[in-house]
Image (cartoon, rainbow, N blue to C red; front, side):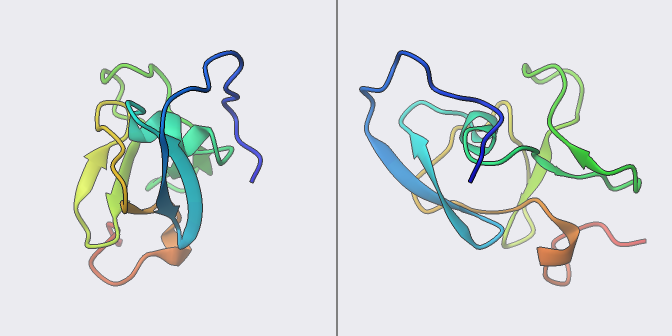
Length: 104
């Protein structure tokens, strides 16, 4: 995958796998979900309002632009939630099961 964020100098932390829309992605200890996502993919989620993909905006918990879903339907803010081994996230409406994404 081609991410929006690139690790430039720091590479010494242990890594682990999370799943994003069913695809294995790598995260490092201490990463937030947002950093893990944008290190692997170009956008964080589909907009609920039909205006395309979103990539977060403020990166610090103020703008509400980085909400994603766990595969069980739990909603979380990617910029303030620590990434954890085994996480399975849904960022695309087409990949979401019933009850995981807000439906019109």
